[in-house]
Length: 404
Length: 177
Image (cartoon, rainbow over all chains, first blue to last red; front, side):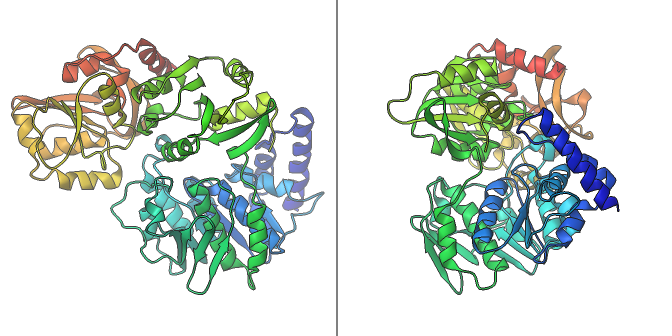
């Protein structure tokens, strides 16, 4: 009965909010539903015959989740998932409300959910997932986590309660995950040293030398296991996205009996990324690349993607609690930033200056900065790039009425 | 020349960015490790992670840093690295409860702004110990502290770099928000 009430009230609240606030999601319906029925999410996933897959780690969660969902759907499965970044308790509950109609729980074969790394132990582990996919441990949000060891402990707790684990074997911290059923994916020893391959939090441990799913070529993408070699073409979204895709393929191979490689090639050809994660959008008549930067390493990788920039907008928002980490990013060689804005534009200006990069115009008002940038003459050669943090990305979407 | 010790370990929150800042302002810097370089005027030891703490402690066993402080070197040790060096050379250091916040502290009767993340004592965020002819400045405020607070940089290493009043103001506002 509590479940039915939670679904009814939660969906009514959701409908009401959407009347007044077009488009954007809200945590309120999920919160309301979780108060009425704390086991709502658990009850929903118990109905899925193929169980639950949890994807967690410092970065790459959203892309890996989206890739895995696309692969499984192409293989013929009906998949329940949560929207990108709705990855803590309220988000999961909201996804249940969104995934069904009336008083019914969502219907699907399997659940694939992205989960915030801080909640992997607290929320993910008690759900005893069929499979956990652990992307990496980075020096990220240290104001929140204190130390990357905290993230590792949370992921370790999730792994211990999961029937199977797919983990990034290039990340030395994840090499010590204690689970007999852990299988590792990653780049081979040549690709792992490429400057565009991710770098992980400091560890005294060594990466895994014998990977279960080894990427030994990027173009075409080639993934080798003991029993098969998968080769296909992938859209170019950087090496970190190749790694996320490999994680998704490894997970799918663990989950799907009679895996159809031809269908995987179709998934790869039509692969959709997560909005804002190196995505191309038409903004004010100009094809523009949006690069979401969330931590030192994602900034570094996205700077490599910005090499072809002809116009650059940079906005460092309030989600950056402590701007100290900006001083850990190497901006040497970056073209001048046309417009710099956001809550931490001033520390960013000095960090850029210390790397010999000019910030041409610093605009304190975000909307004004955005407007000035999109009104620039169309770039003659090269790309128009928006480099934004989570907060400024949200404001940008709202201001320009962009939707995924 | 200002040295930056073991950056592969001591770079938890942007400490090595200070090296770029000094370089662009014409101050000579160098990455240093197991061998004592010539012309060392000051040394920065960046913050370390939990695992990095143990690694730094082992790297500093019988290290030249200890004798060079005695000989007159000034060491600015950020975050946890300060606690480790203090322990090794036997000077007082303070550990408090876990904090992750902007701070405004007084040192040498002047304000210092920044961010702390770790187990620190709010009454002793910057502690200077005289060791022989040198100094250990144990500073809980993270990496950019010398950039955010120009006078502190001058106090530690007797250097002056480009004006940045708006940066200090930005931190002053962050502390008061």
